[in-house]
Length: 280
Length: 175
Image 1 (cartoon, one colour):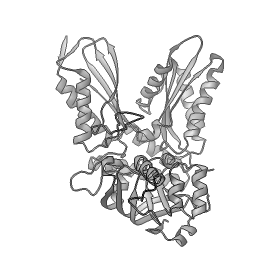
Image 2: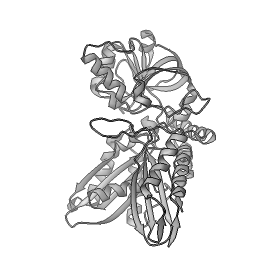
Image 3: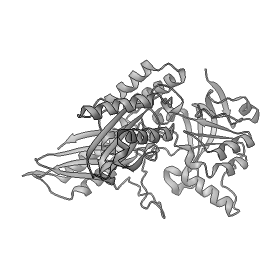
Image 4: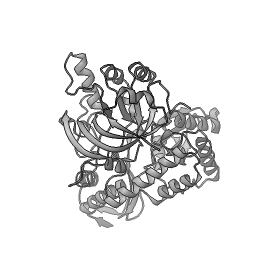
C-alpha cells in the first residue's frame, strides 16, 4: 500500500486548474497555427491570429484564456493500493476552491439549477469521475468546461439499424445546429455505445484527449477523420464567420453496448480546449 | 481596415454599417448577461423604472473573470447572445441601439433590430485576455449581488468587433 496525503492532492489540483486555465496545450496551439497557414479568408485569418495572440497574452500574464473558466471536471484513476489520509473528494474540491479563488478564475457554479441559482462563490462542487484501477498511483486528468460549448452538446439513442450513417448524421446535425455558438474551431468529443450516461461520459473524456491523438481502432480513427473533413466543409469557420477551420479534431471513444441500441453523445468543446493530467 | 466608431453610437453611424464590417469601438457601454437581463425584464413587467437608461446605449454580454491586483479588469470576452433573445426586443423597443455578444440571434431579435434601426456586433469568443486590453475603465452600476453578472459601465478603447447583424437585418451568420 502507498499513502498519499490529502493536502498533496489538494495542492496538485489547485496548481492544475490555475495552469490549465492560463496555458493552452501545445497541441491546440499547433492546430491553430496550421489552420492559420491553410485559411484563405481574411476574416478567418484575422480571428485565428487574435486567438493565438490571446493565448500568448494569457500565458505571459498568467491570466485566464477565457472569462468562462468553466465547471471543473476531473477523471481520476485511483490505484487500489493507494490510501489517502483524509477525504478524497473534499481534497479535490478544496483544490478547486483555492484555484478559483487565489487564481483569479471566474466562479460560474450555481447551487441549484432551477429555483435559487445562487452562486456557490468558489466554483465547487467539481464534477468527479473516479475509476478504481490496479496500482499505487493516482492519475488525475482535469479540465475546465465552458458552457457556451457545453450547451450545444447532445445525446441520442439510435437503433442498431441506423448504423454508422446514423451516427454520422447525428454528429453532423449537432455540429451544424451549434454553428457559431460554441466558439469554433471546436473539438468534437463523441461517445458511442455503452448506456445513456456512459456515452455522455465518454464524449466528455474524448474532448480531454489531445487533438494529435486518434482512436486505436482504425475504423474509428477513419470515422474521426471523415467527420472532421465534412465539418470543415460546412463553412462555419473560426468564430462562425466562415472559413475552412470549423473543427480542430473529432475524437471518438466507444464501448460495448446493448443489442437494442447505439447510444451516441456529442460533447462540443470550444477552441480553448483546456485540460491537463498529472500522476501522484 | 476597421471602421472606428464612438459610443454611444449615432443613428446615422448605425445606418452606414454592413454585416461583415470590421469595427473598433471606443467610449462607454454597459455590461449585462443572463441574470441582469432577467431582472430588467421583470422590472419592466412590474412597471418599475430600470436602474439604467438604455436609450442609445450599447450593452455588452459579458461576465468577466476577476481582475488581478493593479489590472483594470480580468479577461472579459463575449458570452453567447441567444440566451438574451427573450429579453432583447423589449430593450430595443426602449431605445437600446447596440449589443455586443457572439453567435446567432432569433428572428424576433432580428426583426426588432430592423424595426428600431439598431445593430448587433460580434466580438471574438475566447479572446478574453486580449479583449481585456481594450477596457480602460470599469465601474459597477447595479445588481452587485449578481457578482460576475452585475451591471457595470466599461470605458473601452479600440474594442475590435464585427458587424454581425446590420440595421437592415443582414446577418453575417446566415450564409
